[in-house]
Image (cartoon, rainbow, N blue to C red):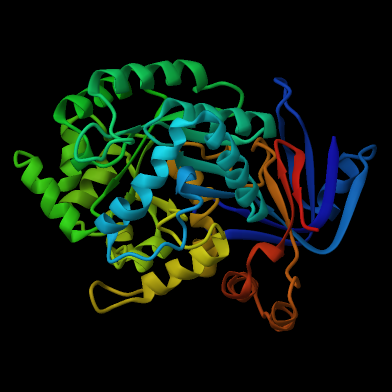
Amino acid sequence: MQAFRAALLSFADDGSARYEEDGLLVVGPDPSGRKVVRAAGAYGALADRFPGVSVTHLPGRILAPGFIDLHVHFPQTDVIGSPAEGLLPWLENYTFPHEARFADHAYAQGVAQVFLDELARNGVTTALTFCTSHPQSVDALMEASERRGLRMIAGKVLQDRHSPDGVRDETEQSLVDTEALIRRWHGRDRLGYAITPRFAPSCSEAQLRGAGELAARYGDTWIQSHVAENKDEIRWARELFPASRSYLSVYRDFGLMRERAIYAHCIHFDDEDRALMRDTGSAAAVSPTSNLFLGSGFFDYEGALRVGFKFGLASDVGGGTSFSPFHTMLAAYCVGREGQTKPGLSLRPQHLWWQHTAGAAQALGLEGVVGNLVAGCEADFLVLDPKATPLLARKVQHARDLDELLFSLIVLGDDRVVQEVYADGARVHARA
């Protein structure tokens, strides 16, 4: 076993944060050999229970759960920062041409390494990620994630229509490939598979039907897609699927809404859509930097909280503009505040942080597994330096409470705050 002494951040079931100024985190193997949190809390209350365990003292540092990114595109690592007039031109001019390169397994392997390095540098220890329509893109990411001991969930994109050569797949073969990838990777070590229709307009009815059948056959897999991101996209979806009540309902109609189904964006919803999310146990991956960058709109936090469906935060790189959870949390705060097109509200810093950790774990159906520092959780955690920059150091010394401390980190923090990253109890990143 190993133990760490520093300030300690964790989360209660109601989403509020718990903070110990002088905390102790004890990590050790469970019966299966996986590294988990054995104890976490006040140093004074726990130290005597572990007399023989060596303690690493980290004065001035904060121990925090590893961040969870609920929606990110690993093949778009090099697309980040590409200008466009909107979602559909951005896909046509940048994304699809770049994703076509992932037919080359060696190329996919190289990008996978860069992608995982960026996640680690920014403190992300679990991600739900799109690959491309090429099965080898999934293999490349899963192989690299397994070597690093990461909890990674990913899937081959399904897109058999309205897509250019190089990324468009063939209906029957795409479903055969998906099932083969599920059998190869789902549940292997810390890896999971997500059935991944790109978005409804890119999939034929036969492909969506087949995806729904796979989701029913493999009920502990995840499902991921996009919905209600852009008004032009919504009009297109309604033209293609006139029998469905709404764009979101298309996925319900093909058996693709259930627990462990994560839909990115979910901006242009009515209350029937919100109730459908709630009643099926599906969750939204809120992607604020992407929505601002592409001019898509603003996620309605008031509506989500009022109706009561699950959600968490996502970078959505490469439409998103940063791998940093700090940048994403700040953008989410600004999106919540916007009150011209929807009701505005101020999200508490504790709640913003929860959306990127324990709340995201809840959305994934992994509550108590990742995203928190409580007994039994897998040992994915961060060592944060709240004085990593001169301005941040000046700001945090005046923090009067936990919300002010966390908000200072959200507004002024970036990858420099992330001093060390541990995944499955092993250090996978240390800031130079």
